[in-house]
Image (cartoon, rainbow, N blue to C red; front, side, top):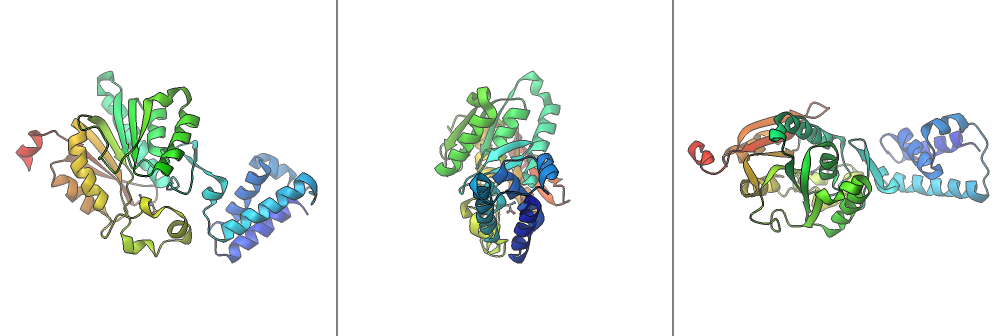
Amino acid sequence: MTLGMLEKEGEEHLKEAGVPDAALDARYLLLDVWNMSLASYLTCREKKIALDGESGGHVCRYRELIAQRAGRVPLQRITGCQEFMGFSFRVNAHVLIPRQDTETLVELVLREQAKLGRTGRPASLLDMCTGSGCIAVSLVKLGNFCRAVGADISPEALQAAEENKRILLGSEAGRLQLIESDMFDRISPQERFDVITSNPPYIPSRVIEGLEPEVKDHEPRIALDGAEDGLKFYRILAEGCREHLVPGGYVYMEIGWDQAGDVKEIFASRGYKELTVTKDLAGLDRVIRAVWPGKGEEENHV
Ligand code: GLN
């Protein structure tokens, strides 16, 4: 038995179970169990491995993980982490696994806010529905934010965010405060931010049943379900951001591919300006940005 043969065995098992990307997942799990880089795997995959002792234990563990993945448990739930913006984020059963689509949002915030410069003053950030904290932690690491708040309704999700904050922000961890809050309920009424970001639950309830088993059976429903029309949390954001953005403050939200028109309408009708839609790498509408002009300003234009 060689590692290469074991990888092939895992791949076949995953293929039979209908797992997309069976070959890649079989390889990732192998590298994870042997705690090995791709380079060292490629140099030793033809060498014989022992089926007893430590190596035998690894073989059993690998087969166990392949069986889990064949049961459509997401890869990241098995390995416990997902890369996002070049950082390795820990995930647990209570957070949405960070998606590449969401990097579109982070990159847009970084680009636009750097351009604004905000007269040299570092900006403040609120990340609503923070989950694993991937948006908030990445922006604190890569952007010019002096203070950030990440809010989530789930205390278990916040445990993952706390861990990511501690591991990834290190000595800068003090810049990010994590708060258990049902949307804006526990955000201090006087506090206003320069930037608000959110990847809220946005999938219409009835659509969830049609999603891949990895998502519908293993990702937290609470992080996906945007109620009947999928738009519930954008309406709450549109109300709450009026109270919690400085005049001229920016809100950036991830949206479903077919929601740009509806979400723009929700924000435009509440007085927001400068609405833009940004596409993800697949060419689908993915991020809406809106600017809150401030009370008075907005009233002149409604
Ligand atoms: N983009 C995610 C998915 O399609 C959903 C994320 C969300 O609801 N915020 O699985």
